[in-house]
Image (tube, rainbow, N blue to C red; front, side, top):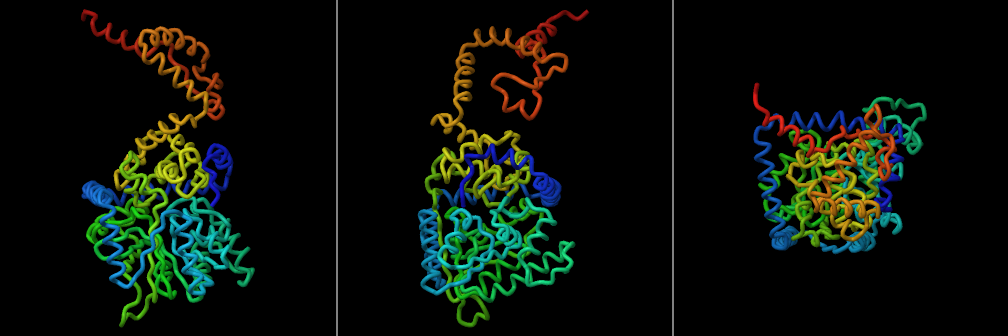
Length: 478
């Protein structure tokens, strides 16, 4: 997957002028937010569950090595195999070796952001293996040659008319005059096309919402039956997950599951919550012959013990982006890599470097909605500020911004000078604002005034207004 995070500004300009995208993004605002609120309001203990979930993940991260070792032992005890992948390339090679040694020609895939992170589909295709996305949203964007624009709703950037056009373009074996106006028709057609693929597949790949150290189980949460079919029907089931998905016990996973669906889609629980432990055992009616888990690091361990460790609590619910005004304006593709929205603004620089992802933590209003709705209470704005500090320290942000801040800091450290120049500048800016008391242009502020007007100051500094207010309080009452 090509990384375009450094061109976030150009991506955003393009997104803002895309009428189809802007129409589709209205569904995010209208759907996810209201549903989450109703689900949360109906659960009095939701805040207590947030505290419990945070504590569970913090404990697991503090003892990550021990829980990962125990998880590996339990997977092996259940007849499975664990593969450790330090990098994305390591993970790709492990899966390609499994495919090559077993003569795999077709792979079915459940929705997995980790497979996007390691660009797995491109690697499979280059090796002559055909990957088939079975999640409806993932299937739609695979037909279009696109990447997900949202971590739980991959095709949220599309409208029904676009999907219909893609189905007619690709499903040429079906009657050209078939009716595809209704959502149900589109769903039925996709289900029929994909059903045949499950039986062709030699290997199935799923992600994991949780890995349970106590039992060696992987848990996936879906609203479609595709996840179950992907892991039950092929001869080989491969789970690919990052190391921070570990939780100590099934009871811990059950507590966090009560947060996940409510935060993501406003459901009490998703339609399917599937627990997998090893391959088919004697007497089992179905299931894979082989069960493999690929555990990916890819920069996560370097986040431990840093100001970004709390990001590893993320359970990928998407609530932060559902409530983010920046995401609402530009969508997920503008972020230029796998993870969009506020969580992507923190995670992306951690994984690909602040030199490539530094624009993202700057794409925030710091309104705090992301932290308010995060079920794991991740302080996303605080961590975005940390990335801004790192960017400034390395001299990666624009020179005008660096020197502007240094100039402001010089005066801020010298209050008398600050007050003197502010007392001159504020009245001048007020006069420059004219009768409208707004700016349509300002030196060094073209990036702001290009798209919006800026209110002019009233004509007095804050300190002057405060002094006048205090003086009035001292006046004798007549």
